[in-house]
Length: 118
Image (tube, helix red, strand yellow):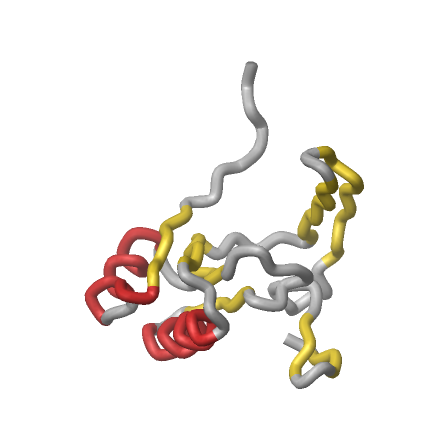
């Protein structure tokens, strides 16, 4: 049976691997920009887009300071929407589609507890 779910190229980064050589390898493999994602997050709270080594290092370092031990790094694929799936007791509780505002790359975030434009 054909699987129509697109596969987004992903690499993983541990704190000890955060160095210039690894960042170059990530950009060479996934191209620019990339999306840095911390595990177990909600509502794009720990999701950053990086198109250069400085922004990448800043975002990844901030996530590692929050005690995340591994980060997922993915190719950036612009879309008009994003899916959220709620799971409870190993079963799907809900599925919803978040629309991405025109000119933005994720649906929303908070900065200092206040909503902000990304």
